[in-house]
Length: 125
Image 1 (cartoon, rainbow, N blue to C red):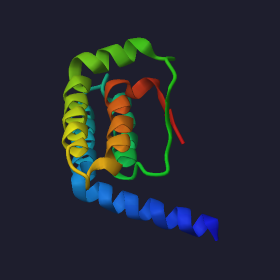
Image 2: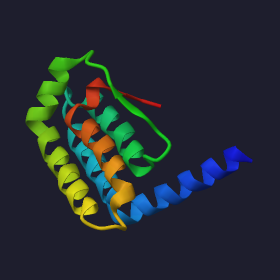
Image 3: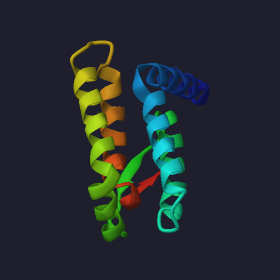
């Protein structure tokens, strides 16, 4: 019974997330992944972008932890694409925190902001 309630709340949270910015953020990750597909160096990074895009599509019920095992790749990411996606996430978190309706999303925006700045040092379940 408790499992069914958690699943229903996760579904409602993900639905609410998609309406208020999550869908467009996942499209942004997919677009970056498609751009990176066209280079030999960017191909492995693009696979990670598609995985993170799916996480951004359904973030409720998932946890993200930072593990700094690939710091050089994360630094390159931060200089090229990470700062732009991170700023989009921070702005959306600030906008969500200004409204009562958006308050449940602030934690999710913080989660995806961590992924935007350090996607190759992040582990999620």
